[in-house]
Image (cartoon, rainbow, N blue to C red; front, side, top):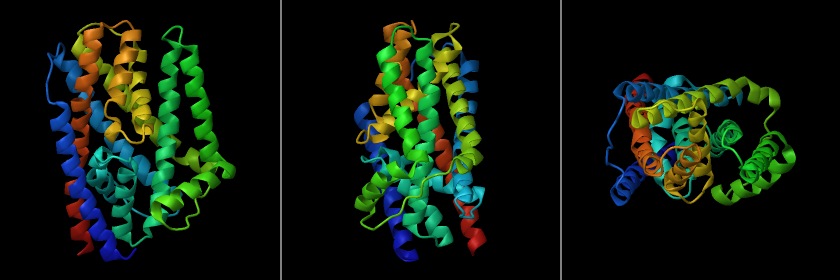
Length: 302
């Protein structure tokens, strides 16, 4: 794909994703704000949430560098920010391709190559998030079957990430998506270890942010493991391939696990529903920073 086509694709993608976001918010009525019992906890949750998005972008940068593609943090922030609402477009590949399209456009890299790296970064993020989220079941009592199912899927992701054998099947999938023959490299453990801490940091920040978020709405002491519910719910929302932004899936998982944690059912549902708007604050933040950094990148190119 040449530079002009890549640029056109990215801007079409950008405007379509914004339209899908507006439609999603309007249709599902996610704009109601409940009573916040602890404003301090809510503010702390927002600050941690925003920090998580910054480190999410940093993890993307580290994966690109580890894969041999030079870029800088401003471009990575812009690529993540301007494509963040792509997750609301049904299909789930759009945010992955969107950030890849931006990096491809600015550096004249081949889109299919960067898209593969973006997909690999997504797998690593899912792998880490599923592991951390699965730990919550160690505190939720008798849920062995669910824990075993999550463990099986985590092992499956491990095989995809680290073995060439399973990557062969994803080469076929990628070829169908991009309509070209694509070679998806197996990630080496050493390469993943170089970037692993950045994925851990952003998930831990999101988890801690969610803990303070729940605390702000309950106004009472809650166990620390509550924070681990979010990476699990978010990961399962991403895995639900045709649910835009994990819509409904993430909220359902959050409500269910909060109830299992002993929180009142109506409060759990309120927390789960409001968590969409809460996380959207982070989306808007990284989008805004992406717009600013995109202008910086454009000035530098000129």
